[in-house]
Structures are given as structure tokens and as C-alpha cells.
Length: 197
Image (cartoon, rainbow, N blue to C red):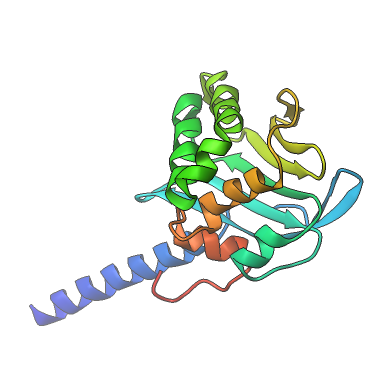
């Protein structure tokens, strides 16, 4: 009887450890460097966004040079890229609204109000598609002097919007005080996964 319980406990623990390993890892392999606005950016880190136990998207952060803290990433000058790969079908409207919720949770009300037009554009872009299918890519580039350029499947979605402050607000969705996923935040910052995951 005790042996059976011990075996069950070992099996549960093994499952949790296996899940932890999967939880910390990014499924897709992102390129080590990308070109943005004529500059070569390096992969700072990557990870997988989970909602409960379900994978939502893989994500990567590219910067001019590597940085290990949210403040360093946000304050860094030059172009930046957030790249995503959908891991399940994602309703466009839901994705846009989730990003806005993250903006509001990690930025001051004054900042959010100042960038209402840019935030509205973000919702419009994703709401314009009924869904992003599994395997679809999307990205957000910060282009100095121009603003944030949105892409879906490599295609630019209209003109750039906002300024450096707005892109910093976007970064805080994942790197701010209330990130959408703490393990993903650590992955983007290149921090080793903690054993508690």
C-alpha cells in the first residue's frame, strides 16, 4: 500500500518536473540576429507564454546589445523587436484586448491616456483579423524617429505609431511590475529558469 502511494508520488513529481522543463523552454528556435531599420539586433532572450497550462505563443526580444534588466531594455537607445509565433489559434480581438490590459496594468493612467491613439491602433490591427492561426507570426518593431511598426506574417500593418515612450509601455506588458507571465519575462531577459517552475 505504502509502496503504491510512493510510486504514485514519484510519478506525480516526475510529471511536475517534466512540465517545469517544458514550461521554461521556448518551443521555436529564433534567429540569433535580425535586421531592423538597417541595424543588426541580437537575440536577448525568448520564452513561451502560457495561459493556465496552455501554450499561447513563443516570443523573442531583440536589442542592439544584450541587457539583463527591464530598466536597461526600456532605456536602451536604438531599434528593438518583439517577435511572436502563435502556438494555437488566437482570436484577433482577444489578443489585442489582452495587450491593452497588459498596457494598463504596467503603466500609469496618464501615460495610457497620452497614447490612446496608438493603443487603439494596436487593437484595430489585431481585430482586423478574425484569428491568428497556429504557426502565424507577428512582430512589433521600434524604429527610432518613426515609432512602433506592427507586422503580421511579415507584412507591415499600416504606418508606425507612437514614440519611444509608447514602445516602452509595450515592453512593460512582458517586462513590467505585473508581467503577463513571470517565466516569460525571465526568458526574455535571458535569466535562467528557476527550479520552482
